[in-house]
Image (tube, rainbow over all chains, first blue to last red; front, side, top):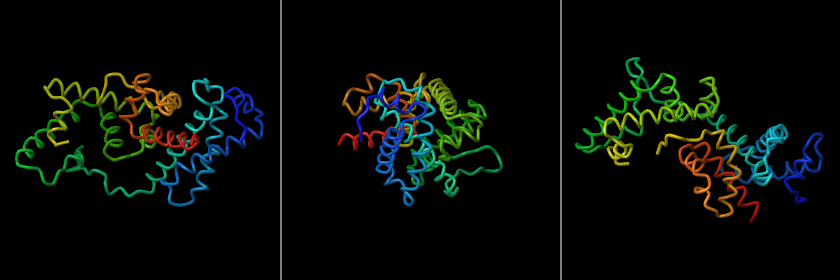
Length: 208
Length: 62
C-alpha cells in the first residue's frame, strides 16, 4: 500500500474520493478489524468485518473535515472503525443474551441487591458490617439520586446494558449518559464523605 | 475512583487517537492526558475500544 501523509489522505478522500485511496483505506481497516475481532467473534467474521468497515468508511468520509491532524490519519480512521465494530457487537450480544442475570424486584418496590454484594459465605463480623453497609448505600441511592440517575446506574452498572443501548432507552446519547452516571457517583461519594466514609471503607466492608 | 471533573465518552473518543499514539510511542500518556487516562479506568466500553485500537496499532507497526 502506498504510504500517504495526513494531507494526502485528506486530499485524496475529499469528495469525489480517489478510488485507490478509498480501497487502500478499506483494506487497512479490514486488516485491523479482522485481527482484533478474531477472538471476539465466533462466526461470520469476514462478513461482519466487511459490514463494519463499510459503515466506518461512510462515517470517516462524513467526518473528514473534523480530522485535526493531531495524530496519524490511519490511527484516527482505525479509531472510528473500532468504535463502529464494538458498538455493533455489543448491541448484538445484548440483544441475543438471556436476562437471567438481571436483578429482580421484591414486593413490587423499587429495589435492587447488587450481585457483587450477595456474598453467600460472609463471616459473622462481615455479615453485620456488610448488612449495615448495604442498607446505608441502598438508602443513599434511593434517597439521594434522581429516578433517572438510579435507572441509568442500574442499567449500566448492574444489568450490564451496553452504554449505547441504555442511552437509547433513556432517550439520550452515550456522552450524556456517562455524565449522568458521573453526577450520580459524585453525589454518592459526597454523601459517603458526609457520613465519614470513603469509597475504600465501603469496599473494605466486602473485603475488596 | 470518582473525580469531581471527568471527561465524557465522546470527549475521550475525540482524543483517543492521540492518546493511543502516545502509548505506542512509549510516552507518559497519563501525564500528558490525565483526564483521558482516568476515563479509561472508569469506563469499560471506552477502555475496550482503546485496547482494541492499541492491538491494531501494534500489529501494524510490527
